[in-house]
Length: 187
Image (cartoon, rainbow, N blue to C red):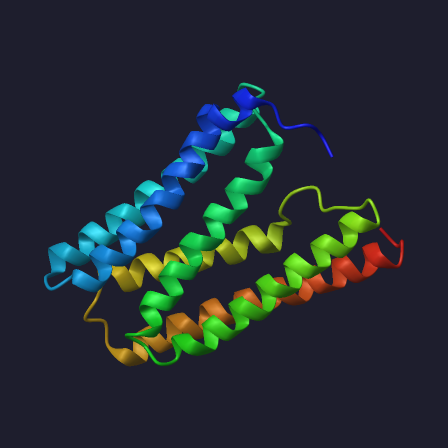
């Protein structure tokens, strides 16, 4: 593993990732305190800011050769914390969201364990695969819709949750197949 340099902790992309982590409890607090439509819009705004910082930290890191070992760790941590905050907040409002919570926990636990096992074998994924990116995109679209339309009819919310669950499940299956192939030396 590459040595982490002191200045890497303070690179612009990593500072943006830290900001995303700080935005997680702020979002949760705003969401649970929300009483008006504007309060929900404020919570949505926090997620949009988080998404923009996620976009820019990656662009800046690649463009200005600021990719660091700490960044490779902290960026996905910020992503998962944000996603966890969203689905757990929504699970208090939409009972079907608990199904998505279960899929999310199983997928992310599998990814963490499989990733650690692969590292022991000196193998690792070279970034997110297209199906993971599509799943994440669908996830955020659904979450933003639920945030911006807090009075959405439950049937519409359930349809969105099912769509998100299908994409998350597909991503999980595809990553499981990929890790299996890596484990067997097929990739």
